[in-house]
Length: 462
Image (tube, rainbow, N blue to C red):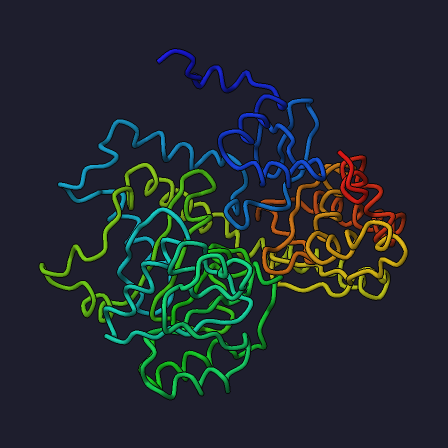
């Protein structure tokens, strides 16, 4: 068929052409959102913490692929690991995959307790789907308990246990028998588990998309004890917090908790290959999928393919050999020490919180006043849904630092740089934030500084 683009053609396209193709054939709404504050830049190179656009400008990536880039962009060892298996069968179901077997063995070695059996898939949402099915099959119960303000993915099952109605409402009815409880509170959880019909309680050790919310110390350990008391499995979602992000290989280690099922993804692929996993103990696996008759109850065509599994093996070796969890703990403490006084220094800052190199800055919602009347409520809408984006826009366009807001709380920007970030780069971020809050303290000036695009939006112009 004539007129098809080749890879070479694609690499020659300019920013405007790419944006037009994306709007026409992919997601016009997302393209419009990204262009609002000039987030639709054409990035052409990435290495480590740094990326470069088509105009040669350098940026620091403090978004880190929402936790997928713990090793940074294009890690050499992960790329080499992938190169070594090119030529092997990548997808061959009528065989046992060497790399999948080894990756499973490595995960058993680095995860706590008796977690031993892995199932491989392609993403975090798929890992959650697999965990929910595993819990039902193993317990023969139907109910699930999840936390308000949580985020576990947007596929059907994962969305059913995600705690934000904005994402759920267009797709209701979702899975039945899914009940939310407050995050960080034991009493409401025990009240729900008391019925003894709950297959699993799914929880994040830190709510990432919820706004980087850290629960009270001891919450996870107590929740596990309550789950055991009522025969409910505990699913721990470490998709964003895993592989060193919080200063431990897994965030569960902060409380010495061993879940029944652990969900992993994002940085498992070294920032290069899409791969997710669930890992559980022998007893639960055998109840759900043990024996010939149940071995194929849950499968994935691309799950555990050679290239993705090789990337996972290389990534795990990088995390362990470089002790990146320790790096995250030390650098996270350093960054937090620089940011902790922001709440007292700047009225715009409501709170700074997090653990390791997973830090959120929450902003106070501004009082829009007369400008809100002029723009027929546009300022209130922006301050409710896009205040974090305004700060992120400032960082991107004026300081060359990439960040983004959290999905469930758009007034929080996340700081999740690769764990290899340098202290010099951390200082550059702190200096930029100090400069923004000193020079542009106030929502109106922040909005206006976003450039013509944000001004035009405020006044409904094109």
